Figure 1 (spheres, rainbow, N blue to C red):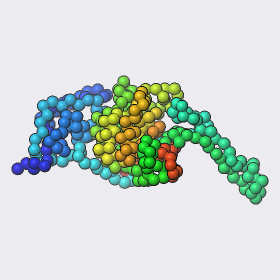
Figure 2: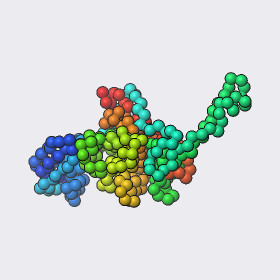
Figure 3: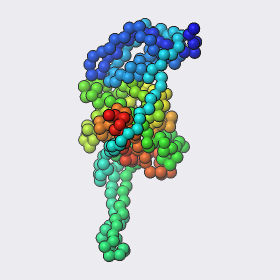
Figure 4: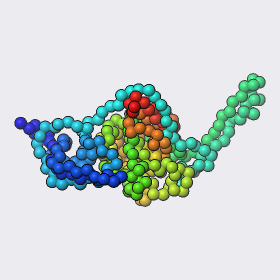
Length: 312
């Protein structure tokens, strides 16, 4: 007898891929969370269950939700990659005098508090030091946003937990090829649904980092959609990063992705680079800012430690 607390979807589907081709399924049966599951959620669950990547569109036809025990699958539960040998990949941009991160944000200014020459007059012969100074916006280079960046009185750099910033199991969302072939700069939930993101750092590789330091970096930048942010929150992502100008679209003053992720306590890392050097999974991500009370965002040295055994 079927367990009335469990439901499955029965449907036909056509999955179109952003790099060409499609996949047709007829009479497919799939575990779903409840009797009110709609076509959009079934589409995302199908992509996750089959582990599909570079999905452009999913059309669901003849959807019927039936009371039936779950059969199991990847759509409703994460897995964990094993450990192994390590390789470190730097994912942060250099910070240099006068560089531009975002139009309108002041460039950093570097200076010296104590020079080697001045130190020579203070310390013993042959002993000298230098101490530098820097003036910069906290949104310079590769940086991390905490909830205090968006919400008054929310967790800042000092109070945000380190376990949301460092030593996180990571997963890369590959959309660079699709965007290079004319795909929409707005990245929706179907690009994510084939991935296991619970408790992970979700890093979106758009390829836009190649424009860093040029005028092209500030125009038509790839970004997540509001529904993608909602999905990441619902799936329990620990952190979300992107190698682009902004995780939101900037055509209007609305910032739905920042708003949703930061309201859920999910830090955001923007202006990453080098994501093409990472495997899809099998690495750990870190991006820790200094512990400054009252600030909501700061420059980070983001990096990944790759588990070579897991990706072999």
